[in-house]
Length: 420
Image 1: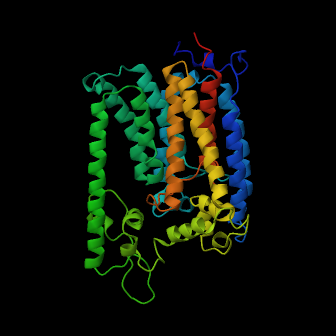
Image 2: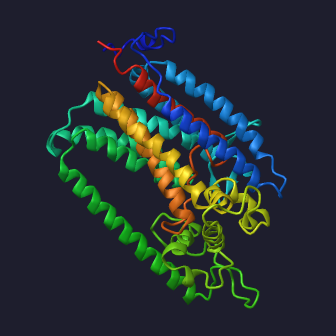
Image 3: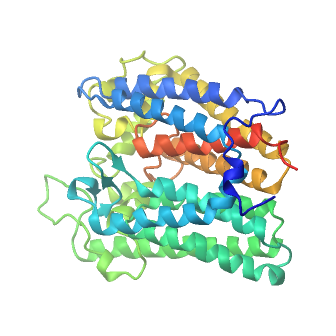
């Protein structure tokens, strides 16, 4: 493989008789996209939102990106991975200093306002991390920990820089999907089991630290007579950023609230009108759908605004689907995602080289985390993180990045035999 000649792999018209299209994933993506447009429309019906039209435009552009990336030999990305990585770091730096107030929320700067489009750099950073991880693993020897220290050091630096910049925004929802993707790629690279044991120990320790910090957070609010949520019957001050300056754990108070919503909802919001409100309404939506649901545009939680229209069409779109199409509709969505994920694993196994395997596996694990965490948070199995649901949740940058990533998997399938 001539890594110094990236233009060799840009032969869009170089398709041979051995290159074929996989149709299973595109059909599943089409089905998911139709679900997304329909239920974004339904979720915003009484709010008179027009985001479903924008979603259709994003999906149209995403389809063009998907086809274009699919037509390019995936080995091209190995030859330009480092350049692509550097280019994607620049917006992550820019967004910290030039993001407008209209592109910020909860004290976070996550978007660059381009006028016609709000670009989220963390989405392209996911692609950059995928490519740079695969590139480093392909070009390095993996064996025991002693043999792999150099590789792990390079990988830690390459992955750590964008993760640090994403954390500084802060954008934890984009941050937490990266480690599973990277670790899955390390696993298939046959890294020593001791490394994963050490990583698991570090993760358990981190969770213990976060739990201890949340416990101190509750104690702090009680000692200072603060409350977590507004209460018309008390004049106590609402806690908004009071504790974060007293802790060395780099979390914001609203992030601690989301964690406590999961582990101690009655403690943090006993009346259910504050930080637990969205979760409570989501549980009602999912639970009230029954077998066949209440019908499209007929779900009272979304239509009457109990499930807030600001979140119903993105983070909690699965709740709207569950209420209006019931268990059967939910299972249909899960089945379509199952096809995408299963096919991604299958294509990773069909690949004839390590780079193709790493790409297909990394993309599939990334999507798996998105699907699991989004659906799990709507039914209270994990803390609310704001992770969107691929091809269904509203979002321009996210839709385009999903299409590009799946285009890479299609390219692995098409060109898996076309190399010497």
